[in-house]
Image (cartoon, rainbow, N blue to C red; front, side):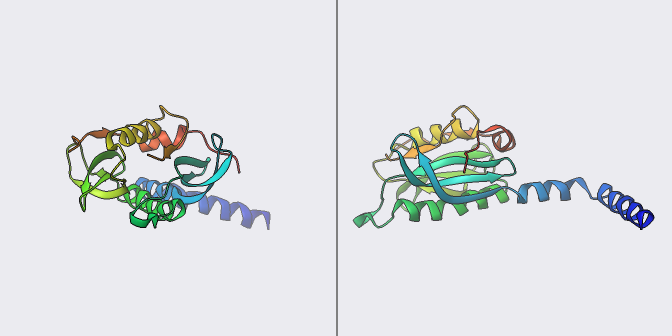
Length: 180
């Protein structure tokens, strides 16, 4: 029985050692999930819908949603969180989350992900309200994703287009995680 166990362990180890690097990288990427979940906002003392990056280290808050948006205020913070979180996942999965920029889509300001510096918006991340300041929100998101800010964006509030490169690998491995 012990000999069979040793053979099984050695065989499994040999198989694991032959997995190509790209397969291991793809598996590691698949372990990062962008989700919408309630998070505690210390400033207001409330639980708010929050876009998180869920990693093997824990959940990292990116955006806390506190304001309604849209005509008739039909986009609640919960709905915005539920719609934006999968967009971050899509951009992460297709490799465009390393460049974030601002732009306009459907005559509204947006934050989006691009394939390269000066590249076109590939994945729309966040539709902003007309009264929002796109460069301010883009800068806050850049600071969070580059590890220069320790808290999520509090999204409550003819712009030139700006691009920021972000190091998602460093962000996911060093950003503070939240307790349950």
